[in-house]
Length: 153
Image (cartoon, rainbow, N blue to C red; front, side, top):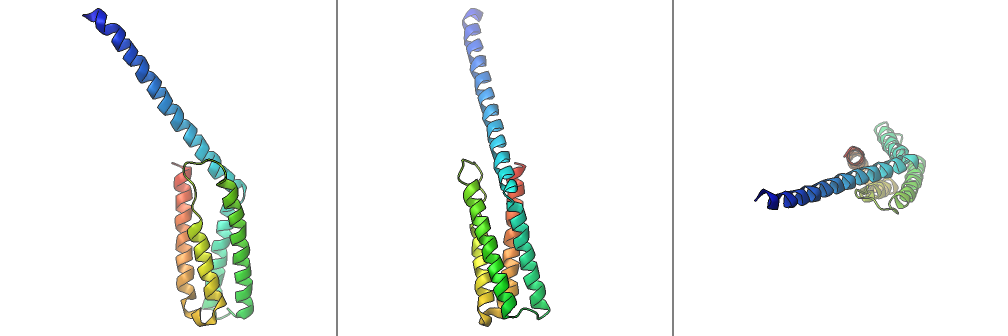
């Protein structure tokens, strides 16, 4: 009876070792790929752009609260936000052109920038500027948390 089970158990053990090595290898490969994806994002100054957008939002709130947000400054802020949005789109296209398991979704950042630009461009919406910018800042914070989660996953 033992003679019958011995080859069967040996084969089963070999299959289990192969499955375990395959799963561990796949996990290691996905981790390295994710680290490469995040590093590519950082190398392209993506984190810097997110911080620049946040700083622009903060400056807008500061100007608004000090009653220094006039038409010229609004146009300058809109122009700066559009430039930052375009730069972020370029980085988004570059890093998402490859194969990554966990991609960073920038769509809500673009939407928030668009809402802030609309609020800054229309003088009838001056009273909702802080609310929209606060919403944008929360979105940037969530995106930074997501990037950290992806990085250390």
